[in-house]
Image 1: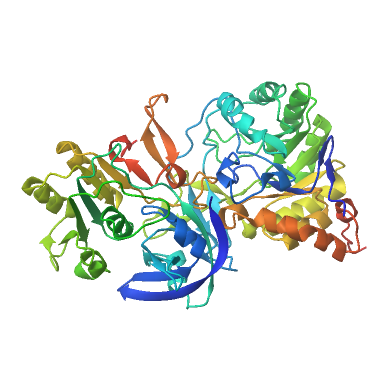
Image 2: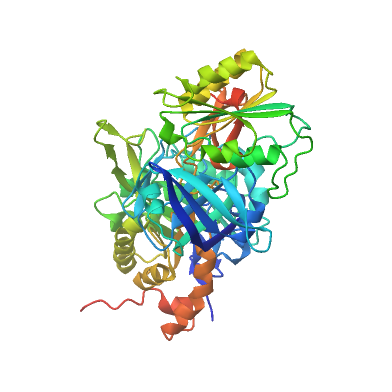
Length: 285
Length: 303
């Protein structure tokens, strides 16, 4: 069951240039959010910006009760919506609804999670902190339970420049293998994240599953890489959303559909995604 | 407190409806909305054949509003009847199916298909979607509007609502035509045509170039449509366009709407309908009225 409430900003800070982290107090939601899911958030009581912004769960935080009472969202200031979020002070009200969307595969029932490779591009690292902690059994989210702990979890994260790798230490602190690529060479591999991922796959161990989040051209490249290496892959999409819960039909993405004349049909990213099996996405219609 | 209101042969327990295209097929709002409390639900428009809809981007945020060009993305009437109506019929509220024809002849055919279906309490004709390729806007012409209504009327005894576009010179003549054709009520207004430009790239933002403006930005336009039509046309009016709060609801009722539809507000305030229903009795009482019907059209205009 989703929640919709006016709640308070607990903290809101700039991590590095343009990338911010907001902490919101909302115990019911903090207790039910799962890695890969998102919430819609907007400053309360304003008609501008009008619409909420979809942001992935970054991390949940326990309160004095020892139970999750807060959740954190990390976002890049891009336009009017994120600018308004970045200007919020602790104590100010925000409207929040969620939990929304699906998750990456969580159980080893249907998916081999022995060696999981996470490939992030730009601000696409945000869902992966909780994914890593959940896979490694370091934290519990909602009702999710990881049945078998993977032998390895690695995060391959690419960005334009070093400054865009905000919160890198959060990921390093999990003990997961973290490798970075920057287009300008200011940190890690110089070049695209997919080049680095390709090299690491060849070095082994061969990933049994790839989860990816980032800009669409990168996700398309990851899909091609995964296909070439015959590794099952899931990608989390980001599209323009008005509602986040399936009523507006704005956020659609073309997915293979054999019942359709064209072989594909639009699906709502908010409720059928944001995570899709990479091979089912039609990148060009 | 009597919240009941009538739209011709359709009686609603209260005047709060949710608008087509802003509430999906209801299931999506589970947990946000207690459906049984609503006056009724108008599900997303269905067409004779499935429509894939427009290419994204389909929306753009604007000042106190948004433009959309979804393009009537839907799986067709047969799928609607088979998959959505059985669920909608369980919700304990009035279901006002919304249909759009690509041609004049498709409207009565769609109505005829819905007529025998259990669980449909009324039909709203979307005569005015601005986003359908082909661009035939039936409700820009009084003769066409009357003819479509007449043909639909001959197919059903169910209450018929005609949803009209504000993108016309003389809305009153169109509303009169709908009334002559046998509409039980007119729904005013559909979205207002608009566009948005990315000047740096010299490109329209919407893939469809044009879209329909909705949200608080269009409330004065909708309110004016209701006020004007209410004084000239006898059939009831359902007001829609930027209704977000109890104050908005009361403004539309006073202007002459017998019911209202909440539209874009559901996108950014998913529980708005429940809050408005909580506040409605008190708002009626504050006018020293004891029923919704006491309030409808009670506006005092300068003489």
